[in-house]
Image (cartoon, rainbow, N blue to C red; front, top):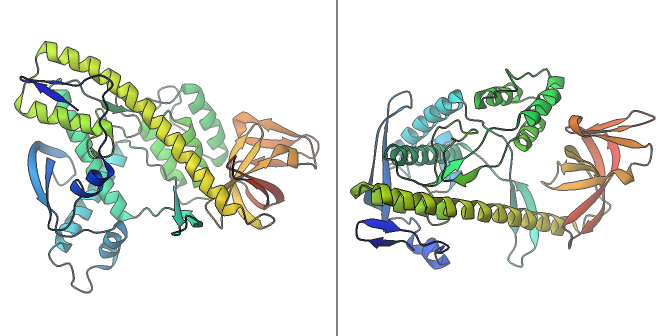
Length: 406
């Protein structure tokens, strides 16, 4: 926890508070007609989506209705045909209108908008995986995303202008060698970057915009994502390359992310207290340590999430050995290639040792395997038909055999 000492705020090293599940799921959860203590970011935009003014203050929120993303998306698309939500429908429509302006402005300024679906795993009451599908991403999700990005950005600007050391969410520009390799690959689709030495985020967004709706859209999105560096937390502030933001932090999820909680403490302290030079020096040291710790914990959490998803996929496919599926090659490695199945949102490996009709050579830069004698090629993006040959739940691995190049 943070201890106030006089007029200063002190963050003890290594003390990472955790909110009990009951608190985050009840006391800190918005419920209809229940008052909640909140920290509000009030932002004024002009008609073009540019920030005119912003202020931050302690507040009380009483939510009227609790919607799901699906419900809001339906209302935005179909309207309130049953007149059930007269008290909020106009607010939703205005929110939607503003979010589209903000999104358009953000993408125009250089934010890279990846289209990479995530798995949604459905399990029954007995813990058995019933289906795995692509998680829905609709206009309601985009609406919330734009407001969250705006709030995070406004708080970062506020703390930066007051020269308060805090935790930045940063994203460094990609390595020139990786960008050059990406350029070489997408050139085969008739795509070209403006430059590969001083790459801008808007150059990459223009590439994604050009392939939108084309067969190679997913391949280009996937490869570009692997070209980018990972976002991380830092006390230093080189900016967020992928979003195209000069200053950015995490503020909107204090009950589930520790950096956001730190940002709340600092923002509250800065509202009625001017930090001295000595306090800022202590804060800078503390923020560096917390940022490094948070980045390591995030990497570990991502790794665990990936392992769990792989486990559930293996469990789901364990009774499908011998069945045939269609899919696309989504990753080419030195030991084979991974195929994403079309019928279910699952990936499996076609090991190169199972390709017995030729001796295949891995061409890493071109993301493909090529036969030495027959010159048959298997590359990222190819459509294939495969059969499930083995599932190892302990290793979380699904093995596939290639049946046909489609």
